[in-house]
Length: 428
Ligand SMILES: NC(=O)C1=CN([C@@H]2O[C@H](COP(=O)(O)OP(=O)(O)OC[C@H]3O[C@@H](n4cnc5c(N)ncnc54)[C@H](OP(=O)(O)O)[C@@H]3O)[C@@H](O)[C@H]2O)C=CC1
Ligand SMILES: O=C(O)CCC(=O)C(=O)O
Image (cartoon, rainbow, N blue to C red; front, side, top):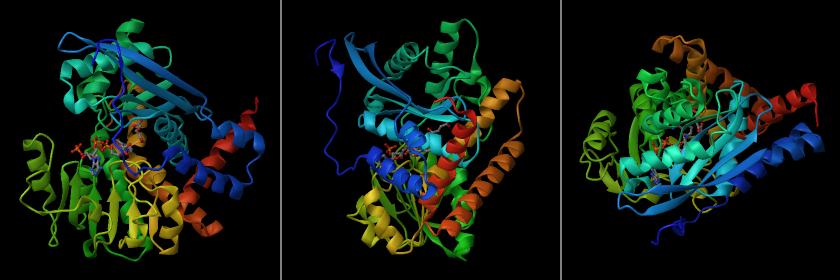
């Protein structure tokens, strides 16, 4: 590639629906149920701000490559915007816009004082050195120094990023502003102001909401089986914690493939294997390789999609056998699959509820940074579990009240809170 061209690797042809359209179709249904007024509808359907940046990075071969990055602020009526940063070659603006809106709804569902944002850079971190990723992260931070801020917009990890990138972001922002600002970002390493419990928080929230849903379905964790798609931060922690509750995990997958064991996979062994093999499950002997597409329709009671968007579609929804879907990923189900899933009577704990444990503990991290005081792990987990259980019950009761699926009920809860706040604040 010639120097000074913008790195925009052509996305592989995948059967993906547009996540922004999927988000909007659910938003429209909930807005209608609520009788949302036109003014608030029009404000909420569009993102407040979208920033596109081009980041020149000197690569290890001495050539300069320019990466395209985004930060979308969907809404800030409830507080500073919050949301992760994704490094992936499939990142695109509509995806980031959908993810930013989902952050607004998610923070409202768990009732934490944040608006929604999301960021991303089109890149393939698996082919980049640590130095290249560091220079790209610092360049992205500098380009967005007027957007980020502890009371303005607070990033966090998402796919392809973790504590290491958050540390570089915090350092660059702090140096640029001449003061150490731990509260500008969450998901940091523990030694520099990260919170106990953040690493496992999203997977833990998935487990807590799965248990709450199983109770509604009169099923015991020790009597059910599950399949987990994605074995990164969210999927692996969800698998570990569900396994600890007695759920038999029959299938797991990552980008290398899917793996099945009808007697239950020893999840601790799978994690040890992944850690010893470059973060991949490929070659794991504790299960048999299966077609990755078949994982979603495998013979299990609980399905946990915890990888990417739009994996459950109108093409495979008919074949799903699970009674319960708990969405660890953002947007794993495209809107076209909703009617099929509802018709089949499958209970869905939607993304904006099921994976909100992550942002909840990010909020705790931010509070601790502002307090200059560290909470114990017990304080973090007890408070996060309570928030997740309360949010689940509120969404469940809303679904009963309006006789609507849990997904739409979650949007109703979120949009209602945001709309009511607009009513009190006024100003447009
Ligand atoms: N991290 C967090 O706190 C939160 C994350 N989320 C959402 O959860 C999802 C996963 O995020 P996170 O766990 O952080 O990301 P990670 O990057 O840690 O992990 C992603 C996992 O998905 C796997 N994967 C990617 N594509 C596929 C595929 N097509 N089929 C099967 N597996 C696949 C990856 O495999 P490999 O490693 O082999 O590439 C990896 O195991 C995303 O939708 C994210 O937005 C939501 C809330 C909070
Ligand atoms: O932890 C956070 O602040 C945001 C996590 C995130 O990006 C998400 O919930 O999708």
